[in-house]
Image 1 (tube, rainbow, N blue to C red):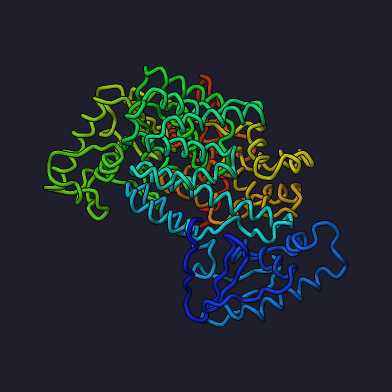
Image 2 (cartoon, rainbow, N blue to C red):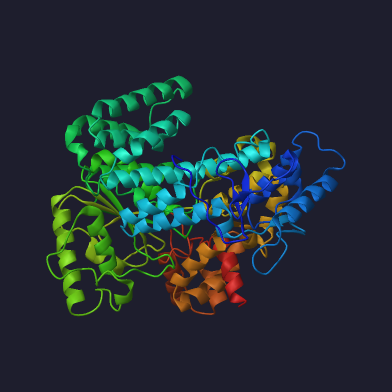
Length: 626
């Protein structure tokens, strides 16, 4: 935001900008975009690149109150003018704007639109942070922010539809700015972020993460009195505007600053380690799970249990719950909170050397043997120990150093998305006061002693609250029956409810009842649960791949039984064509893997009613037909 970027694009390519006023440049020269209504159409299409935009959405953007009878014809004129102005898309000479049954679609490449480039750089920066490359993360995030020239689409915000899209873009920019500022603080360069954070807090005074970063940057720069004043101003603002107190995490940050004095000027590597490794997808605010969150805080906060396993199917919100608890427990773990993913992006398990190396980078742990550089390379993943010879020695040194560090510190370690027990056994503390919070799809029955929390489906009220945050309370109240059908068709799975909300937030013309009908159709429900690059089917497929071949076959047979609300052991034995003992083992294997749910209270195996989550059952049916 402080320095406009130099736009570069291939010769003859049009470069569009939304992160500021709407502009288009061809070979460095700004193009005239026509009258205001034509620019509104173009801005709406660019806000949803490479995605069909319904005619109704374009109409609402141009004529929000009373569209004329000639609205469709006028839109055709504006689109035709845009085609002439913008020319073909790419080297293949295809039409830039095409019309189909889904509406109008504007073809655009990443190098032609600043918001696509912004998203690509932001994802790369977060991935670098997740690998522990904070310097690279800071550089990539800063490069993304250099594309942000001011309030997005600030020349067209008098249109309610465009203003909503602009607000969404600005929220993305603010999140990336927060990521960048926190990374710079962790690198020991807080001064570079102070002024920008102050300006943004003035524009967004109730955005807590911005204000926390500002407090931290001031404090780490030695300006403790100013940092404490930032909190006091925020506390008064919250009381005056909302009648609320700052969150427990914000209050804990304030208390820690009171107690640390100027010692905090030198940042501790693990102090803010949760932030750089925060999950990328599903940005809705944490909702629901009050009982599970309370149990997690009590168990970890009292210090009696050192290992907690939070289990649940893919998309159940395990990571969100774990990170929420980690933030709220800041004051109970003075040596930091660190989170490491135990899988790679493709869902495969990382080897122990990789995980230990990342923990070492985040917490300032170093092994005493051979350099671990080779051991952390994905190419040296021949064995769980990271290879042979020197690699095994380096891994052993890292493991010893990690155990030593845990014995001398009180920290919370979040091991996220653990595929099996073997992936984490060597990482758990053998002594000391560190605690470990594990999230996993399966139960990890081979780990003991641990405290276990299984995440059930969201209750109807919690799921409706989450949906309302995404589509607006007014729209939810307009048809509460249809909204209830939607969340129930999602099986109470938080990811599915979030995706439904994100999809409906874009398809503002779509009645909730019509979308509920689509989700009720078992042959098409998973096709509907896609929003941009977030796909429920993709997440469920990842969980499916975790199952053994025999378990997949069993799940495919049992999924049909679950459609009526559950199945008994007798029905399972009949469907599987086996005896009672074999059926018990098959069902309990799926319970252990998190693919079948059973009653919370004690009940005999024959009296229990077992269930397969609806969406997992639909996916199992799909796979059964492959």
